[in-house]
Image (tube, rainbow, N blue to C red; front, top):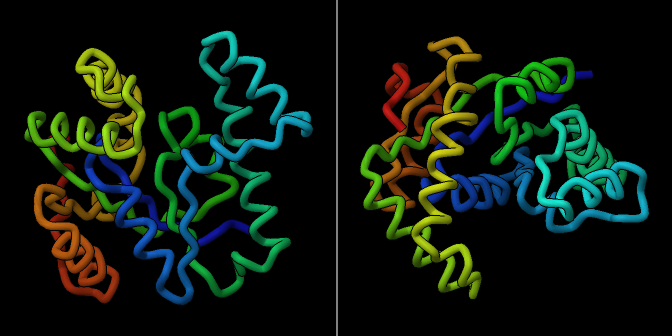
Length: 202
């Protein structure tokens, strides 16, 4: 059985996590943030050990391991009755991170909509990421070179994922708006009110 899925997509700092958390509080939506999955890895499992093995050496974690880890997290949510796939829609942010992951996940998820939180102004993203890093006390993440690297990784690896999905599935939302207005636009699209359908610039 494939999970009915909405993808929240956008550059670091575009507000995917904020919107995902809010959508996850609405009945019949289950939010899964890939970052949270990685932060709560059970290193006693085979796939958890594999993930740790790669990341502790500073190596890129293979896409198969990443998707397997995500699958385990979703299965645990189903077992705990937090996510009921027969009636809930899965809201994903942070995965798939590249086209290879998108292809692997095709047999697992049925993507109904992709919300592209577009924020072409890099200065806005920089300032948001800096503020967030300082607020969360992640001082390394406030480093401008680190932020630049994350945005470059997004441009080179993640942004091409948009081309994997049909244009009519993609709704572009202006992520520079206040979070409540971004949410309003997402909900309007979910309720059949027309949004933009051409891929944005970021």
